[in-house]
Image 1 (cartoon, rainbow, N blue to C red):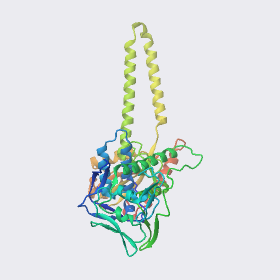
Image 2 (image 1 turned 90 degrees about the horizontal axis):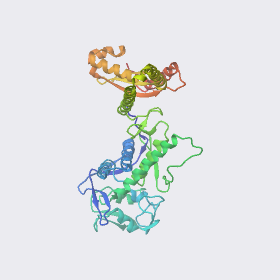
Image 3 (image 1 turned 135 degrees about the horizontal axis):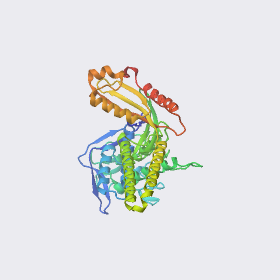
Length: 438
């Protein structure tokens, strides 16, 4: 069961359109922009915080590959935009909170737009509206206030949020593919750095994300309906993602890491969890098994080759060589047994008809899963607690899933390991209503 993270007490608003396209400007730069006939949706990015972050990291991982396919990257960017909208880089890349109405923009350090420090506002705005015609989008003073006029139906935000967001939420607003790719790559690289730092002994704190939160540009309020909530007034989706990422890294109830098999980012249940899914864990086990069989095959082939080299004069030495080979294999088997890690954990058998579950711990999870599958195939019940429903609903009404895998420490006894597993079992049982337990 994949663990997810949600920042349920946070809220903000962002815009996404249901269709985007890739256009090329006069300088050959590729941009992504909403289609003219597309419709917008206002949503809360924090409600999809886990998927939003993982989709961005997946895009960054693809872009970081040496043999990355540009067409795959473009498809991922289009899908990302449909799901979450554009990043709002026009606002997050400069120190100015209110760009509209100012003569110059001052760029933030290490921004992904340009290496320049200053730029005329009109020139800067044109970078993000390369396909807008005269009269499509413009500003005008009305009753001593600046207002953005747009020749289309798109949302307007009033109040404390900067006026530039009215441009960001327009169908004429566009962002270069290279900018989006660079941001995604930065997040992926940060995660890789974090994992490296976790595996070494640091002697002092290391900063891997500097200067991302700018209090002068990002505000929040606290609202109360059924519970208190923080309503963020972010200047961009980029800032929203960086905030989600920061909370995901620092919240002790989440462990953001990468799968040791497929290398995808996921939230682990504990430091011991190494794989994002049972499928990846099984793939690793298959690879280990194949490597072991290949090693044994190679040893046998080498032994046969050595025997074929023997002459009649060497025949007296054959028995000694054979006995040495047997001793070596015994030592190898003993060594493999001692080095083999004991992996237990907690599993759940769920009745998908009435949603009742049986939660238990087991020293050998793989054997338990095999016993369950065998019971399903033969119709015999795997546990007396569920026997009544097993007979009533049938074996196909039950599913098996691993809740947590735990590796036994080298200095731990079996008795202590069982006690530890029991603690995890009780933790998972406490999280479910008693009415839904067998």
